[in-house]
Image 1 (tube, chains in turn yellow, red):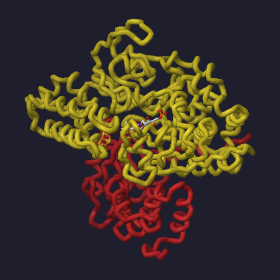
Image 2 (cartoon, rainbow over the protein chains, first blue to last red):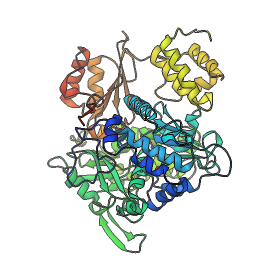
Image 3 (cartoon, rainbow over the protein chains, first blue to last red):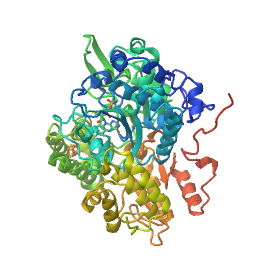
Image 4 (tube, protein in one colour):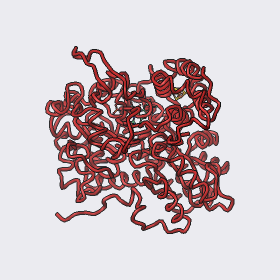
Length: 452
Length: 183
Ligand SMILES: Cc1cc2nc3c(=O)[nH]c(=O)nc-3n(C[C@H](O)[C@H](O)[C@H](O)COP(=O)(O)O)c2cc1C
Ligand code: SF4
Ligand code: FES
């Protein structure tokens, strides 16, 4: 459990770490649980969807696409059954927020899902949970059966003629199952090879080629709060186009790593690292930050970021000035992704950090697209060789050329996720990569930790 | 169906319960594989054939899953399976050192099973608990901040079979608040 910061605004995690709260239904009911399901069921499904649209809530899984808009794309004319899937794969390195929700407040997710299922007209819903969350799956199953007993889930919800079953489905340790079309293939009992878009947009051709909505755990929990507050009120939290709170997950070399929920834009990256997370270890200085899970482009501590925001205002930021919302890290050329902020101090050997990340992508590529399969392996091999005494001056450019041949040439966004780290690390820390060639046992930094 | 695998009545019942939950039988594949693997430790060719038959599929449809997903196994891990997170956030807190300590103390190389079958060790990718890294999972329990001297102490307790109930190594799962407060 991470220590709560006094400046947080906890909406999703309001009760998660309350010592008088547990993951059982009694606790949830005591704090107004399932009242919003009742409220939603008194509305028309379209009206529920309208509130979600008005709320402006953007997906918390990585891409930040507005949930209400995604629901609008649903093909309702096909006459085929509609499915709702909660993406609980939580596999982007640096991300550990969905875990807190599911283990500590599972009913919030179930209520959010049943409201969402009602809004989109789904009579079958799934939670796709990563298999390492053994206890998480048990907690969810127990919570679902508690909710079914009380008529909040399953047949004839709240005595209405709307029914929606909810099934917990476990993955088996593959990162690519977090990609929504890979997830769907996996849920169909196949290898999780992502599908090409178009035509396979889940909202049109999803599970069993039926219209399907895939949303992240945190996104679906927000739906419950949108119904409670109303879309317009919800939209007042945070900033325009960056509404609601976000749970930021800070890891790496800070004094107090952990998960912290703040209104979007309520603080900067600098405040998060130095104030909320207690700064770096004594005597250390900041080297680099990855702001949105390992797939996001790295930011260099001494970089300047300037340009104009969507609303036309000019900005000129240092790393510490970047606002923590969706658009801040994006304007700085990276992304807020899944909210996983990975902090590296001056003891880090950047080439080793790169090699660590490359090993991840090489291990996780599904292997369908040649550029991704071969490229991720080569990037791993090159950086690994560089870290075991075989670095050459030309390796930096070689890495960039491999990464360039992946980006934009693959079936799914994993290609970019694998290429962006290399492109940003090598471009921004080129000296570190070039100097690696002249590293010897004598001049190697003795402080640096083994990362590969 | 003939119970070639000698699965327990409990596992068979669980399989019968899980399959009809899905609109299409094939969707139950991963869940059935998990149930079989939980009991047998691995899914060999006989098990593949049995599962395929149960779901009205070809054995290759199951085999291709076993060979793809990192957590599915053709050969069993040790009686105690120790997983250490390898990915960057945990590495930045010392997980490579943790893995080395475990290799030495448990007497098994990463990715392998000790000869006596007692322990196995695996370097895994991000386990989604990066704020408290290095993260270690033993069987189904998640342990946090296992680094340096704590890693040594952890391995000692594990080897002595005395890990359970030690306050400083309370798992993430056991730290959850399960109490139901008064009204
Ligand atoms: C390689 C890859 C991995 C992903 N992993 C996850 C994940 O673990 N959890 C998640 O919610 N979304 C993940 N996503 C994003 C999903 O594809 C999808 O956009 C998301 O679940 C949609 O939900 P949202 O709109 O509520 O964010 C991943 C995407 C890619 C390309
Ligand atoms: S980009 Fe990579 S992960 Fe995505 S489909 Fe292609 S090979 Fe698979
Ligand atoms: S990197 Fe180890 S749990 Fe995420």
